[in-house]
Image (cartoon, rainbow, N blue to C red; front, side, top):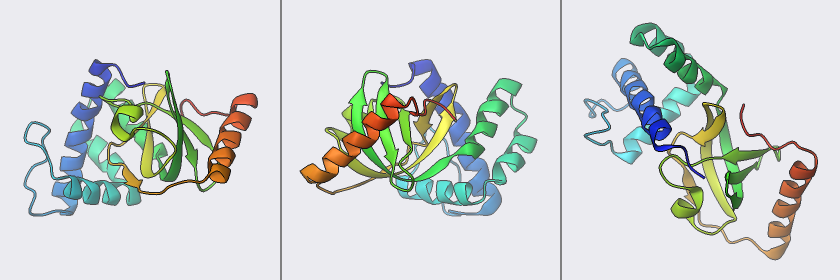
Length: 178
């Protein structure tokens, strides 16, 4: 499952100006003059900027003070302070989203893609990923800069991932939003 196209567009409408602000104010990638979706951005530079953002979350407040966003949009961006960074096992793909299991604590999240489903982007599960999960309009998405690791899992590991998912399903502990 992925976001509605209008929501995916809105995400990027909010995301790129935030990255541009972070880069301009904190000179993370000084060789990058402007971050604009129409012009594109080098993925490595975007990753450096987002790494800075997520490790200096107070920058979101600086951005909101300067950006003068409509209240609804400001609330969306404010919600990103709740981000969940880490390594995840993408356990399975379902119609409503894909199941991400936190390697750190076993928490299970239903995560939607932006313009493409996770199955379209990464293929068959399970997969080990480094990702930042963020809330967006009652759903969970990623910041778009996911790092997949080329790892093959044996039957025992696959069974353990499945059991973690099934326990979360039985106990109604799957997180659909933050």
